[in-house]
Length: 291
Image (tube, helix red, strand yellow):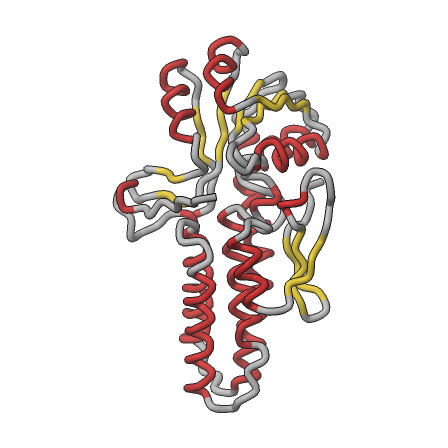
């Protein structure tokens, strides 16, 4: 069973600190917008869908202690919270999708009382978790149909349950294949520099009872050539309208290798990962870090 990534409990957000996996399974409370901004920026919570949900809760945490009754003041604080959270991870379009959903929720309601608006925003955040679980299960069911018993797969970075609310995108078909009695073998790229594949994906797959082999990133070509890999499944941070996909560094390499060796590559992602403002991949801002 996948591990829940984020939940609302006793007036605060609880997340699993992914920077401490696989050695420690630690859940941490997030009680204000600044803690959420830091958690997203420092990759304590990561993966486009999970970031979107976390960002939405971050916005709520930013306005929940607004005690004024002035509607204009509340809306200004709400907008400031949205913009602040959006600055934490510019590449993850789901973050902007989530804040857009909250803006739409506030715009569409006729409620004028600030305390009621807080309740409406919180309910929308909680509903995002349920919606994400439903979407990821649908992705899993569609993808599981492509996986035959005995298949060998390869994946990159982490698009499992810990990248979403619970079930994952790229790993969801693998989880369901295992649940349906299919024996599969998954090669996992370590995914430098932060080793999400080594630390998180491998942990998730082994936790689910799936045969898993961890490889270095530069072994992918050899594995695809010599290990009879049947398919590659990856997730996405952002998808342009022509299908160009931005994902963790190293995904482009896999795409080139997949074409060279004739291995089908599938991108598993929800509709919220598509960016209607990006016609091609050239329109997607790529986040670069010094460390």
